[in-house]
Length: 126
Image 1 (cartoon, helix red, strand yellow):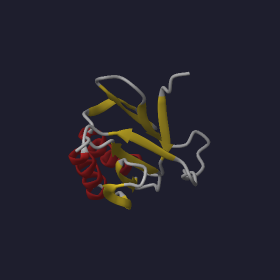
Image 2: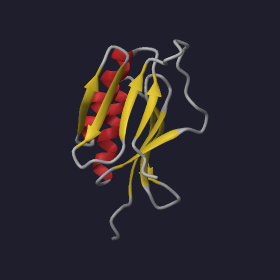
Image 3: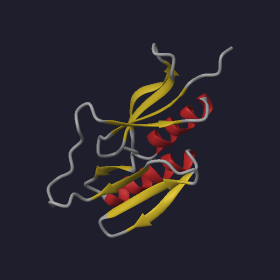
């Protein structure tokens, strides 16, 4: 079953939109829709999209413990740019860009609501 999209709840749609506009732009994506209660981003090459929304039940948005959305980057430089964009737009660091024990080059960050994301690539052999 193909993955269609990932959606995170937010308590502040405008603040979260600023964060995702900057981060998703680093991956070459852009807004695919915007409504009063939700905003989505998609990528020209297709694949899963990402969205944010005010929770339907009107309760506060919360982040999942152990939940993370990972987005594959082209290279190590893109991982670093994404991480920098995240921090410059209200995000927080969960792991600076660097080589991980599993062989990935990765950076971990949280959006302004505390949802965890990851940008990673498989470094070129050399």
